[in-house]
Length: 405
Image 1 (cartoon, rainbow, N blue to C red):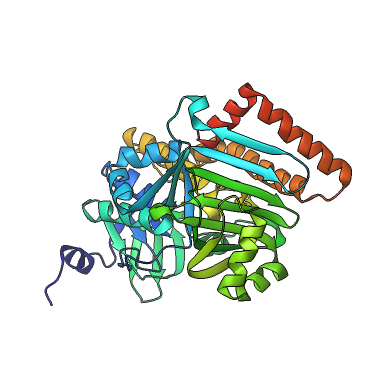
Image 2: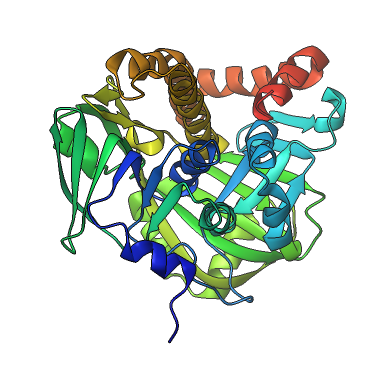
C-alpha cells in the first residue's frame, strides 16, 4: 500500500524538535495547534485516538457542544467553519428555561439582542475532524495519532517527550490539553482542587415527536437539570443530570420506558421521543488548578478547569483558553522572545484566571440554587426567574453573555 504524505512526514519526525508540543487533540488542543501552525510555529499535536477515523453516516456522537458565536468566530478565522457546517451544525435561536417548582421560567430570543442565532450545536467529532483536516495541510504541524504520552523531562531549554511506543520528540514548550485527568498536570506537580458532585450526566440522541423550534430547552428538576439541544437532522441531544444512582437506573431502562420517562421529565414540550442509538453517562465534578504553568509546561481547557455542564459552557471556556494562549505565544514569537518563558506563560494565566474562576463560581452557584429544596429558596428562585423574564434589559445581557459577546 503506498504511503500518504502524512505517513512520509511521520517517518522523518523521530527525535524531531518542535517549538510547541500539544498533548490532547480534542477541539481545544487542535484549535491551539491550528492557531499556532498557520502562523509558522512548528507544532506537534499528539492524541491517544485517531480523530480522522471515519464514522457511519447513520451514527451520532453522544458528545456535543453548544458553541457560542465567539467560538464560531474563532473557527471562521481558521477557515474550518464551512467544513463544520457541511458535516453538521445545527443553529438555535432561542433558549427556554423553566423550573419544576412554581411558574418560574425564562424565554430568551437572540433576535432581541440583534443576532440571528444564539449559537450552534455541533457534535464534538465534527469540530475535531474539521480542525485535523486543516492541520494535515499545514507544513508546520506534525500529527501523532494513536500515541500515548509516557513521560517528559525538562532539561534546560528543551522538554524531552517520550511516548509509550518508544517514540521521542523534543519541544520548547509542552501544552497540556489532555483533559480533566491530565497526566501532564499530575507529572508536573500542579495541584488541583475541587469536589465530586455525586452526580452523573446521561447523554443520548432522540427523535422528538414535535419540532424543536430552533430552541435549546432546559428544565431544572430536583436532582439536576435536563437539557434538550437541537441537533442536525431534526434530532435532539439530551444531557440529563441526576444523582449517580438515578442515572445508572435510567441507563438500564428499556428504550420505551426511558423515552416515556424523558417525555414526562420534559413535560411533553416536544411530545414523545424515539431513542436513536445508545446511551452514555459521565460523572460530574468541580475541579480547578490554581497554577496554570510550570517550567516550559502550560495547561489549558479541562486540564485546569472542569465545571458543571448545566449551561454547556465547558467547551467554550476551553476555546477561550486556546485563543488566549495562542495570542500570547504569537505575540512573544513576533517579538523574538522565548515563548516558553514564565513571563509569557504567566501573562496567559493572568488573562484567563479571572474569567475561568467567575464561570466556575457561577455554574456551581446555579447548580446549588436550583438543587435547593427549601421552600423559601424555591419561592425566591421562581419569582427571580419571573422578574428576569419581564426585564428586557437583563434578558438581553444574559443573551449576549450566552452568545459569548
